[in-house]
Amino acid sequence: MNTRTLPAHDGQPRCSWCLATSEYLQYHDTEWGFPVDDDRRLFEKLCLEGFQSGLSWRTILEKRENFRAAFCGFDIDTVAAFTENDIERLLNDAGIIRHRGKIMAAINNARRARELIEQEGSLAAFVWRYAPERPASGRLAPVSSSPESVALAKELKARGWKFVGPTTVYSFMQAMGLVNDHAPECVVHGEVERAHKAFSRPCQAGSLRP
Image (tube, rainbow, N blue to C red):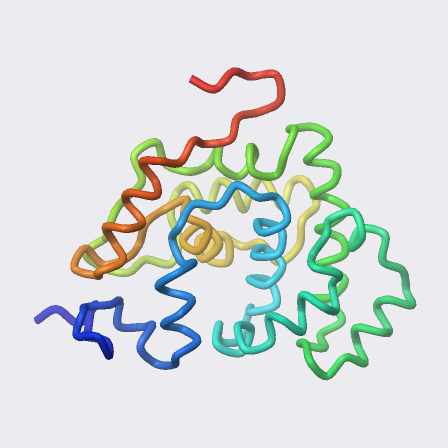
């Protein structure tokens, strides 16, 4: 029996995890798995995945707009310039997760992201280097990490990033479209596949797109 998909309100099969809340369904249908090459969005997702550690994605999703306001839209240069005053401001912001370690990690990671962009040309060019050449599509069983997520997590940690373990990074890869983990029967699976075919992977500074 297939338990990875269930019919949604329109009768079409969706990945079963997204039917828990309307917010999940909207996120699943319009964001999860669609390829992203915008540095700000990639940085935001890495930060939010770090804040999710030990919590549910529903908690983060419900607070996402609060996070965006608190972290100035996750503009990398702006967050990188946050000071102790900003840390105290964030620790007093009831609209976000008030965890000093995670807040400091987000600021640290903005600084590391700025360094990485200077070296690689863009955050997108760097992370997409770790996407499989032929992304696994619609795995028969859910997984929480992959060789690529292990490698990307290891490299990010070596560059000084925080809260970027293999499981966190794999969730990031699923969400940002580096892999398509929609169940094969999911109605959105085909949409994501078509988006992948139309997507051009970002290339490193100085390299030519094939």
